[in-house]
Length: 389
Ligand SMILES: [Zn+2]
Image 1 (cartoon, rainbow, N blue to C red):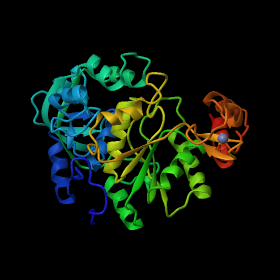
Image 2 (cartoon, rainbow, N blue to C red; image 1 turned 120 degrees about the vertical axis):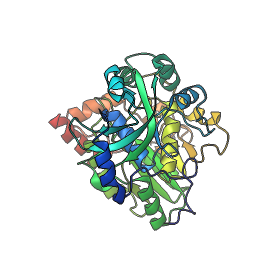
Image 3 (cartoon, rainbow, N blue to C red; image 1 turned 90 degrees about the vertical axis):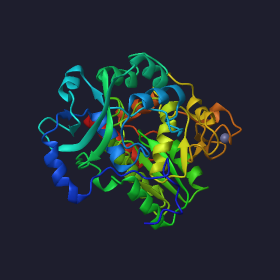
Image 4 (spheres, rainbow, N blue to C red; image 1 turned 30 degrees about the horizontal axis):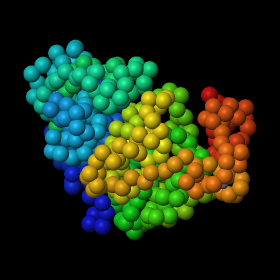
């Protein structure tokens, strides 16, 4: 498959850590002799991203020198932009189990088949305070990313990965495209420029508007919902997927827009995660990436525009992917259409604005928000889901 008319992956080469079919059996037998480690749900997501090249140029879980370099400089030691270390945690007990082994087998669950073999590079102690401040800009344990960091072990195991098979999934199978597959699909559709949209929420009119504004200037739109671990009060992925399906059915041009899933876990790292998300989507073949207000934020840990401003801290062209920054958007009665503070001269009284709390209240009461806020088909799915919850 020719990739010469699509964007290059981060670092230039799309990583593929899956071992060839012919070597798998031998490696599976080798794996029986290695210490076994069960990988947490979040790190399993990272393992999958690594395996398929979504984290190109990374080829394994990162070592101590890279870890500190990223936290201090937002770059890999090679000089490439990178904002969040990708590590594999070990508890004290697991450190003993690894001992002096040259390799370990990684499992999704106790007694399961090995998914991957990690050639042990080094074991190092993580610096929780430094990591929390650098990645999440807070040490507050109420922050879901900081809380996850504190639940993880004190040590990290670094090393190159050879992946025997991808973590098994039972859901969204037709939407699980690897970066190689989305790239091939873009080529097949003749898209040279593609804008990626990260989401962990149902899509209401405001985000539909932003996506379509972006689509006006590129060939195609990839709606790329994150389906790894999120915090408990986010709308579950299977409900969100049904919302995307009805939205695509009714309101999106099929030859210009597609949905596939991003198997990452949510970190809620705001600006640092905005850069990380953009780089990942470049690996999936996106030339452009939408950055809204408070991208990947949670609570009020980050300023409204911080996730947009962080892009200015990189040299032009350094990230490769072009961020498209968007304002908050809304329906305006006087404009008679969707608009933003950039395009609408009218006041608050003419603009339809509903708080997240208000929308949840309406849905819980079985009431559709105005169709200028949410497509009725989407509202019905959310009402139905809340009834079941
Ligand atoms: Zn207006």
